[in-house]
Amino acid sequence: MNTDTTVTRRLGLALPIVQGPFGGGLSSVALVAAVNAAGGLGSFGVHHLRGEQILQTARALRTATERPFALNLWVPLPGEPEHPAVSATQWQRALQRLAPFFDELGLALPQQPDPASVWPDYAQQLEAVLEARPAVFSFVFGIPDARILARCKALGIVTMGAATSPHEARLLEEAGVDMVVATGSDAGGHRVSFTGPPTSLLMGTFSLLPQVRDAVRIPVIAAGGIADARGVAAAMALGADAVQIGTAFLACEESNAGAPHHQALHDANKPATALTAGFSGRLARGLRNELMATLDAHPEDILPYPWQNWLTGVLKQAAIAQNRPDLMSLWSGQAVGLVRHRHVAAFMQSLHMPQDTFVA
Ligand SMILES: Cc1cc2nc3c(=O)[nH]c(=O)nc-3n(C[C@H](O)[C@H](O)[C@H](O)COP(=O)(O)O)c2cc1C
Image (cartoon, rainbow, N blue to C red; front, side):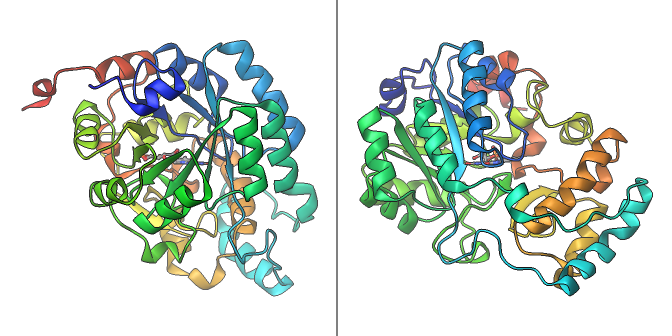
């Protein structure tokens, strides 16, 4: 593995490995600390947290690691209201679709929450990230405005934005973002496109990566479908300066994925992954299960993001407590079949293995 790249030099890393951030509470301080200790860049997804919680998280991270880390936010999509209105009829339809599952878990159907009490304010999140001053501010679904990027520069915060097409990569570079994460549709979690419907921007990592490499001069980090040393080597051969790995880190015990999710990622008989808007209202990749099939069969009953995300999130808390992987989102990328490790140290070590170790 080439460890001397523009990314490792700029961030002072021993290895060109970025642990992908996980939103929705799946990141953990332990995961970031373990990745940092092994020479990579740990990331913490904070898009679900309010300003003061982001500052608390940064303090906890600094207690656990002296090495640089990334904080990660979701940029509100252009033209999309942060809290799209949902009528009482829409709410009732979505509830009725999920009612049998709430029933199975012994849960009462929830009241529609007050949006302001549930979803954090993006402007406050940004202020908190700037105050926390992480080594890296990474983001998806768009580009923070020029004043924010200028403040990051002034504070010495490296910015890292996700692109799902060469065009998005160029937009990030033109805006002055420092590094681009070329994210293929193989990746687990949300499809983070910001220039069009995600269904029209589904290029796989190894088609996208060399095109992004050709489109921009800033460092390129490859994400999606990389889960072992072969994937790292292939991405570097296609021009990546580092790789960002999500699913294989999510499968490590140090992540906050929860027992049913960990088990599902390691299950020898796991189903294939699929893209669905059913869990959150936005397109995202996870392992197929009963809940995904039910929601996909009735797209008219899926609420817009973030309402659907909140609703299935209530179900998910109970599903984790009752060990019901069939009734929760099991986010995963297509490379999940390559996942072997349950601990970060062993996984990071395996990324150094000679490639012929993998030949059958
Ligand atoms: C459960 C889950 C949650 C994710 N949440 C975020 C997020 O909040 N912000 C982000 O930039 N990327 C997020 N990602 C993407 C990862 O950081 C990473 O880019 C991706 O998982 C790489 O693809 P792979 O899963 O094939 O390794 C998420 C991925 C997963 C699996």
